[in-house]
Amino acid sequence: MMEKMIFGRYIPGDSFVHKLDPRSKLLFVFAFIVVVFLANNVITYAIVLALTLFVVVLSKIRLYFLINGLKPVIFLMVFTLVLHLLMTKGGAVLLDLGFVKIYEDGLRQGVFISLRFLVLVFMTSILTLTTSPISITDGLETLLNPFKRFKLPVHELALMMSISLRFIPTLMDETDKIMKAQMARGSDLSAGPMKDRLKAVVPLLVPLFVSAFKRAEDLATAMEVRGYRGGEGRTKYRQLKWTAKDTISLVLLVVVAVILFMLRS
Image (tube, rainbow, N blue to C red; front, side, top):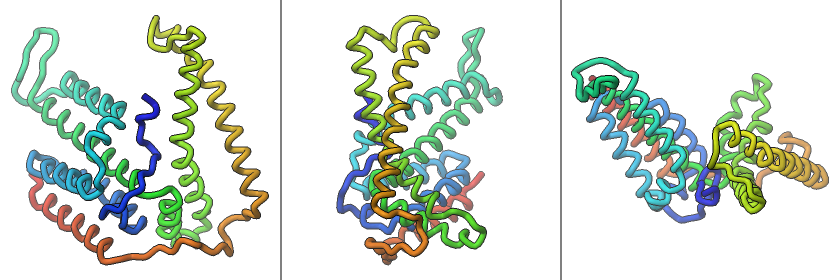
């Protein structure tokens, strides 16, 4: 299952989304997180969902691949829906089982919040799938440059994010190997009471943390021997270039935001 996870993975391609400047993609995602909260009825959520599917089509990433890689997130979405169905009260009673009552407001809020969660995860996943970690680092560092006057360590923050994205797939593969090794030794993480399951997780976490710290130390040593001394005075081989496509993508999001604001109930 771990090898199917798509968090932090980058898929090379030549789609419209792949060719966008990382700065425009970061701005699009950050603005989209705000725009999503303008939706509060069926029509506005349909527009947000249509925009998300449109971006998925432009990225040339199969929808099945996204859904298959985000199964744990979809499980959380279903859990959120069920939680709202059971806890939120208001409106007409849709189902009365005696000990459980499902209300109209609970169903509406559960579906809306689950959809909001889904589109946000899809958009952020498309960002990481269509943008290499080094490009995300350069874009984030450029966007945060104005904060340097406030003594914010912009380069270090961007570098930490890049390294984190780079090693998420590696750590997942390492976790999968350790789980298979533990299962070969007779350890079962999916059976027995919760107490036994938690005890079985400890032999999994210890070697994973040891491996993560070792990789971090090796990376720090490699960067040091190559003369890395921070971001000051460093030149860049990859130059970012803003094109008309980037402007069009942001203008499209602004238009969608205006439409959502006008259609709010």
